[in-house]
Image 1 (cartoon, rainbow, N blue to C red):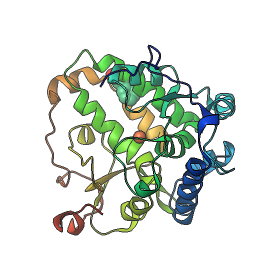
Image 2: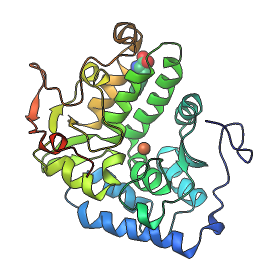
Image 3: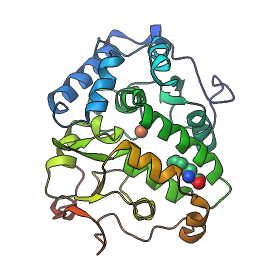
Image 4: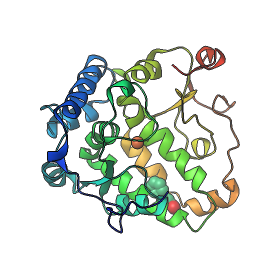
Length: 282
Ligand code: PHE
Ligand code: FE
C-alpha cells in the first residue's frame, strides 16, 4: 500500500466532514437504523452505552473532532481520519497513543451488507463505542504497544488473530446470555444474528494461546467465535503475559484451522458448520 499524496506522515487526512453529500449521510442513517433493528438484546451493554454517550444516532456521519472531544473526556481516546487500511506500524502507533484511525469514506448503497475495506461506518459505529469503556480502552492501547513490539518478531499473524477474535469478532458472556462486542459483528446485520443464534459456528471460551494459533475467515462469517467473561479477563490475560516466548514458539504459524474444536476447549456450543459446509458467503 502506498501513502496517498494528501495524507500526512502518520497517514492521517482531514475528515472533510462538510464534503459529505446528503446521500452519504443517508447511507449512514440507513445502516444505523438496520443495526438498531438487531442490536438491542444482542450487543453488549457497554457497546450500547457507548453509542448513546457519543450520540452516534443523532443523524448523519459523525464529525470526528466533536466526537473525539467527547470521547477524550471519557477515556482519553480520539478518532483520526485515514484513507483506508494503513501499514501495521502506523496502525499500532496510533493505537499505542490512544488514537483510533478510522476510514473517512462511506460505502455505497449497493454495499450495505458487505465491503472489503473498513469504511467510516465499520470503524466509527463498530469500533468507537467500545472505546468509551475504560478497560477496553486500556486493552486497545496495550494492543497497539504490543503490536509495535511484535514487529521485532516474525509473529504478526498470531497477534493479528488475537485482534480478529476479540476486537473484531469477540463475544462476551453476561448474566443475560451471550452478547456481541466485536466491531466486525456489530457493524453487520446478518452476522449479528449468525454469531449469536446460528447453530453453525463454534462458540468457545477465550484462551490466549488457543486463539493466537487459530486461522480465521476474512471474507465470510466466522466458523468459531471466542467468548470472554469480562473485559478485565481479556486485559489481564494479554497484559500480564510476555508474548515473546509465545512468538518464538508459534513462529507466525496457525496450528488450528478455523473450525477446529480441541479436547481441552471450553465448548459453549459445538457448531454444526452447516453454513460453511454449504459453501458460505451469506
Ligand atoms: N503482553 C504483550 C507482549 O508482551 C503485549 C500485548 C498486550 C499485546 C495487550 C496485546 C494486547 O507483547
Ligand atoms: Fe475493524
